Length: 280
Image 1: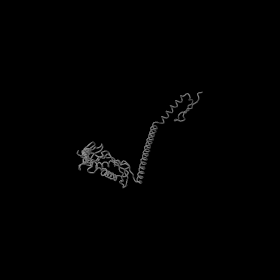
Image 2: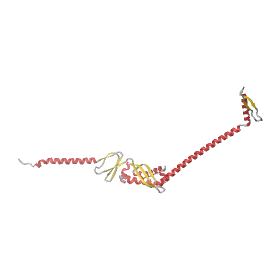
Image 3: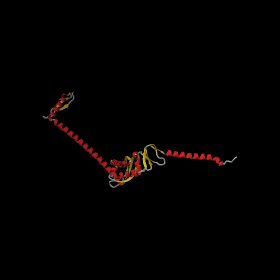
């Protein structure tokens, strides 16, 4: 009986075992290739795919790409808030602390171009400098008082228009610009406060004077009315009318049962004097 080498008996099983490892490795590689060929863009985002220098944008959903070759960058297309605190000069040359807020969002149709020209950090590279420049440029042409009054709205609108003009073509949609808290130097703030108080007091006094003037005019009209009435009455009452009314009154008194003695006047213009006496 010929002898058999034990290693030879184990050789087929070893080959099968190694083949199984190789097969699993191939399956894993294929799975990774297939898995890496797909990518998902979440709602509210834009996917930017870079393949050998070619840049392409994709909307929300499931998409394919070259496995291990294409690079995917996700950019937000939602409304974002940029808040900044800057020290800006006014028309008077004063330095004012101003908090600004810019509401903006990315235009998905310009995502690829914006990424290629600026990069994914477009907020810091593009929006922040443009916003600061627009605010500084417009406030330097305005007085500090405008930041406390209705002039603030005008500045906000002008800043927004300027940013829309500069950033719109780059793919940035400016929704709104807000000028929030304003901090003036202490002395200027006190001066403006006193000036506002003086203006309010002046307006109050003007109202009081106007009211007094109207009251004086009312009294003058009333006095004139009384004077006109007295003139009309005095012109309508003559001496003859008064005598006649006196005679009528005398006749009525004489007809009364309580009237007993009538003394005639002692002159031509005198009216009778009536003395009442008891009936008994």
